[in-house]
Image (cartoon, rainbow, N blue to C red):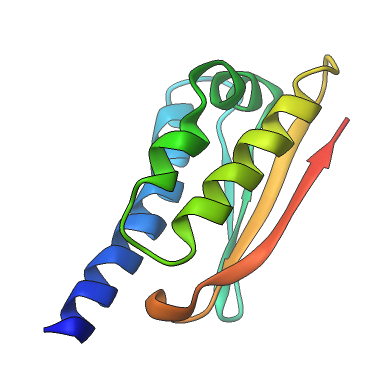
Length: 110
């Protein structure tokens, strides 16, 4: 049962990250999703970065029952807060690993 919970929580984290891609899909400046060996890279547009900043979407992700959720949510909000100060600011992040051991990188770009 414990393994199933970890897999479901990991799927929720990956799903939350993909929500960003879906939300941006209707606009001209959609989130770019790039498959990588063992993971995925998300490149938020400046508009998507502003949306994450204004809605504090990282806090929403942070409550998902997964060991990585809280730190990922905090990092996403912090990166969006910093990048949103610039007209072309954006956030790029990668997610690697199996669902129960997710890791990755996050960049705040101006």
